[in-house]
Length: 212
Figure 1 (cartoon, one colour):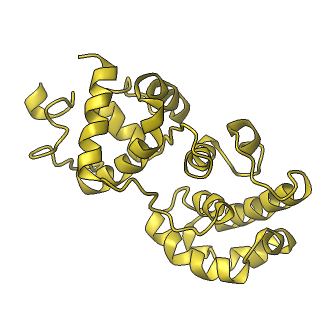
Figure 2 (cartoon, one colour):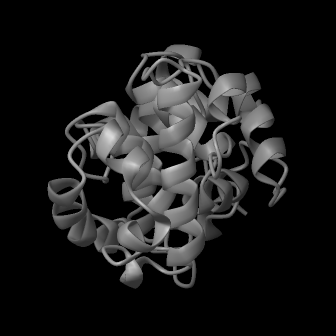
């Protein structure tokens, strides 16, 4: 079985398991999604979703964030970890969006990654969810599970995993696949004790006991 064939099977199995391919971060607009994704680094999405309602109520738009100080933003995101760095990045990114990008969030990986604190994971999420472009969000769940299944070579490097998955995933399915694999990684293919018995991907997963 080729990696492309295995990828198609994984796409279809996850579609059946999670018909709704939705991002687990709560956001009402692209700016909120950008900020929430920045906050999610080394922090759970559940924690971010607990923090953002008050944050977005206090800073309701781009100008509010751009006019704020990192200390003011930091007060609302203390529980997210590395909050001082994240607060500084959020304020700097919003100022750059206002002053250099005309208040508009760009729609390319190259432009998005010029924003302070925005890496390829966040940029891909924005391109996929906001602009409807093919995107691969290589987060920890994606890296772990695609390596286990056999869609990638087991690399832990997010960029390498992203590039490998772009070669095997149908472009029109890639963004939804990444959302579904996050849910799958939390429910079934967990980091420490994957539930291989009864897993809908076990029949073609290279790491499943029955596939050895």
